[in-house]
Image (cartoon, rainbow, N blue to C red; front, top):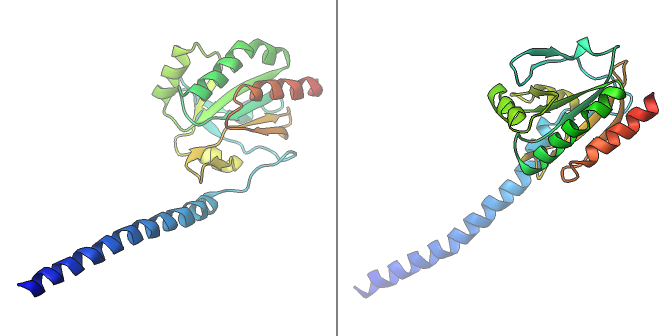
Length: 195
């Protein structure tokens, strides 16, 4: 009977030792694998001077928007944002809404792009009275074509604004997850230089 009790005590002691080791190993694997998988999925980031890819996406009304229809006619402000109706994304979208006329005067069309559905974009646009196109990049195809960087080990889609001239070339890139409203000011300042 004494031997059994001793055996059980040793077994309990070994499981107490193995459990923290297992947790530490799991954390280490996650820390190592997430950045590697994020890099593996990362496309080449477009740079200033690059031509934007030609793409078609549905807007919040289900209409298919072909970006090629705007090239050669207008400057473009294409901004990628993480998610509809989150605090930073709402602040950014409402700032674009409030200054949309300024962008029109600068001969620029604004497009917001994220991975949500048409119904999500429609609800977001109606709730905040957005007056520009929100494009649905459900599979993140266009985000990958632009090579939009992610944040927090690839867990959070990036917030990046591209200013594109009439020829379809990128003339400015602004990448900031937390300074949502600065995207608007930077875009306007660059567009004023294009006039």
